[in-house]
Image (cartoon, rainbow, N blue to C red; front, side, top):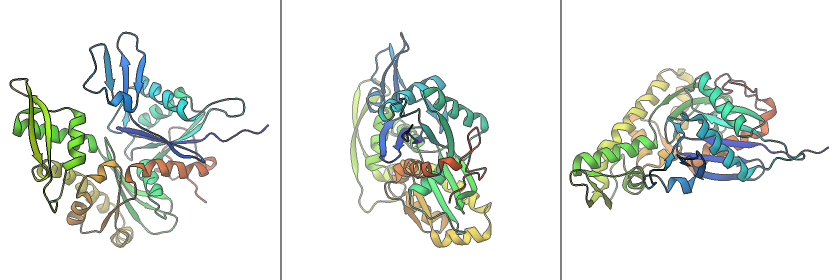
Length: 346
């Protein structure tokens, strides 16, 4: 009897979930948010619809991110979110069994956290689960040729974490993870606005500010944005104007910590691979890498050329999709296949 392939690549991020369907490409791009009824426990919305409810829900509904810092913080909600997303791309039948899935995990993930990811995916409807380090997936999705002896450095700046890895011969030579990502930049903007202007803004507004005028390097021209929030003292609505220059200092503090970790990874890397990286440059992936001037800041601090991957926020998902062709060589279980170098690419 003929069975049709039903394999999925899942970039399970703190802020967003992207699902790659074998042979079809990325079919799901949704915020990793669920809205739940407190009274019944029923999931009301998942993804974009749930994200639009953040900060706007009545008392009997809660909208939440079930992942924090790149790992699962609410197991039940993660399972139910994945169940909903699986239904959008996978229909099980006698001819189409439950999917096998490859899921990204942060570089610094523990075996307990790995097991949590595996269990959540199985409970959500996966047949088998395989894990791949996020920067390895991102490097594949960015189009890097990892098959040779040459070293490459990838920095994947996600929503909750930044994953850094030196890659060579289809494996991870050195890696590290730091708990700073797009969410931390959002929080820094919200704190800055409250401290300087006495105005309270929500997460969604802070993210909009980051995307429109956020900067870690001086722009050729200053850009401004009108922002509405709540006056911290009076509680009344208030509108202020922010500019890109004043946001550089609070955002650079976080970028500096990421670069410090990159330098620490290079310090633990062999001189030969560091020499390769000096020639190949640093590749930035992940949604957080699109913050204006991030590549310029990296070059200034590391003195190594730096480039932004094409469509950086989908690199990890595309890399997961590419790894589906090797799924028969992967080992199941709570083992990070990249870290243990069990991924046998031919």
